[in-house]
Every structure is written in structure tokens, then in C-alpha cells.
Length: 179
Image 1: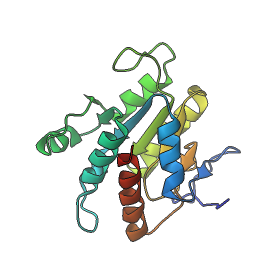
Image 2: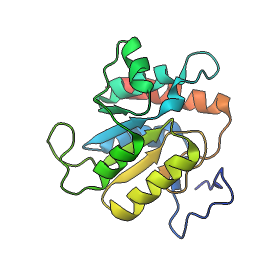
Image 3: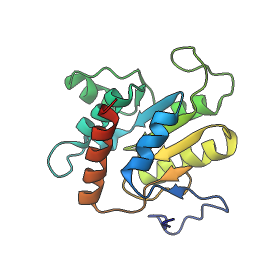
Image 4: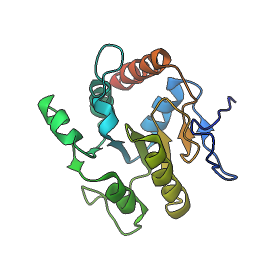
């Protein structure tokens, strides 16, 4: 299995580190297997990355997987401008607190989520959010969809180039759209 080093090297993740997602197919399989996945998108999704804005890829993935999307920071307006209504808008720290809460039944009242996918959140902030979930929400699996290895997640892509990451996102969208 591939290994990776944290992008922010001075941080120590502890004895439990994220498994590396070696290829997009693994991510797709995990999303399809999850009973209640949720996608949390931070403000960095509005950045343009070689061609189309990253937010367009996230909308495509959320629609294809039919999963709720939580917009953090000011991104809710950008999603709405594109004709996509997020399930909720809330600060990133608040959604992390709700995911930790064993009594929270989700936005639809149907129970806890079993897979939380994080993307577009500043690396250092996502590190802390994922660390909290790793320690206080042991039944929740987490994935970092960003292009830098995030050791605090359950699963993460290794550090990849922007070009490879865009290819990963396109592949994920294509595979999720196939029913």
C-alpha cells in the first residue's frame, strides 16, 4: 500500500494515521458502500484550479452520490449561484461538533452519518477537525478529498500534483454517475 507524509510536516499525527487512497476507484467504492455519507465543503472549493472551478467538481460528486452537502464559510452563495442548494450552511467547527455528538440524528433525522468527506478547508483547520472526530466519533469514518495527505482522516489521498488531483476528481465524478 502506498504511504504518504503529512503536507504540514511539523505536525505529528500520533500512532494512528490515515490509510492512503491509492486511486479514485477506492474512494468511489467507499462512498457507494456507505449507508449515510455526508460531504463538507470549505471556502477553498471556490478557487479555480486548471480550467473549471473546483466547486463544480464537488457539486458533480455530491449530485452523483446523492449525498447531503454542508457548505461552510461563504461558499453557500457560490453553490446557489450554480443552481445547487446545499443541505445546510454552517461553520466548519459546528458541523464537526454535530458529527461528534452521538445523539445528533443528522439533517434529515434519520440517524448518524457513517462517512464524512471533507474538502476545501484549510489544511491546518481540517487537521484539527479530523483529529477531534478521530478521537471523539469512533464510529465515523472520515475521508479527506483534498490533494494533500491528511493523516488525521481515516482515509486520504497522498500528496498529488494539481493535474493528477483534477484527474482524480473527474474520474470520481464519472464513476459515481454510473449507477
